[in-house]
Image 1 (cartoon, rainbow, N blue to C red):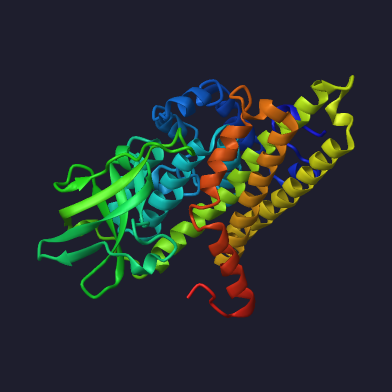
Image 2 (image 1 turned 90 degrees about the vertical axis):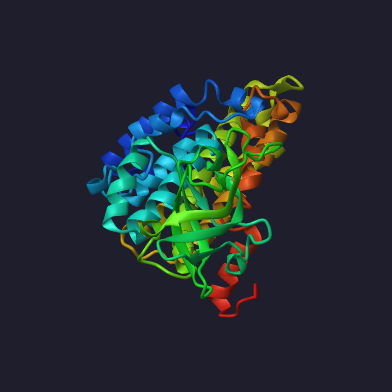
Length: 392
């Protein structure tokens, strides 16, 4: 199979659609993952610990805010480059991609898109280098798919805002230096606040006992009469448009990231099927095994082409939220199916930590839910086609 040994499966010659710069970026990040992620990622998963020491290294290779302007110390790459970086990071582990994705799309993006020039100069260069870590607070204990019903609120106290509420399932929260928090003002309008670590009443307890994303540090954001400086309000956006635009960027990265997890599972399954013998022949010679491989390869190739086309639309500023939603849903669902089928090809060995499949499968069970659940994304597509909002 084309290029299967180096971790990238390119059945439709998609490399021909990429520039030399794209190919160099992909190779550089792949090499980095091979050296810095793969040797120890199983240990971190088993121990339910996050390799936080990699965050600054992610900054060193330009994986934090790749598409953010060079004016603010970021690489200033295009969206296909961003996608390729997410693909390679998730080939290593979803936790690594999630860390980079949150920092890039959910923290740096809103500061660049909605922040003041002072906010951009203060935070973006440090975020790009991994010198500080960010988190994104939208999901609440009682409100996930319905963010418009959020209960987190802030009131104007003259020289500051007073913030109260809680967010949960927040990637990076226990180690975050800042959090982009979406809350309602006294008029019920959703606004974004940059909440800095150390403010009295702001805590970020860690969420443990997870069976998925075990190498990703997750927690809550709790606000008990937190005094937020007025200069920390994002001035250039109001309403749910703000967090939804952030999620569009994150979902785009996820659509690419899922390709990396899927390709790693498929590569593992094909290699194993060629080496494993039953009835004196490799199991790759059996019709049912070849059926699985052929179907997985077809689904992966379709998803690769969708991601590439979406990247072109993103570069031209023509991608719609519904198109991004479809790609996120399709590609994650594809990756999860490939992980499950690949596990079957390995039989009992598929659950062993000697292979990455079960780790990818558990991680993808989270990815199919976060940044919009599989079912909600189906309804977004249905709404776009029919004009009828079935989720209201």
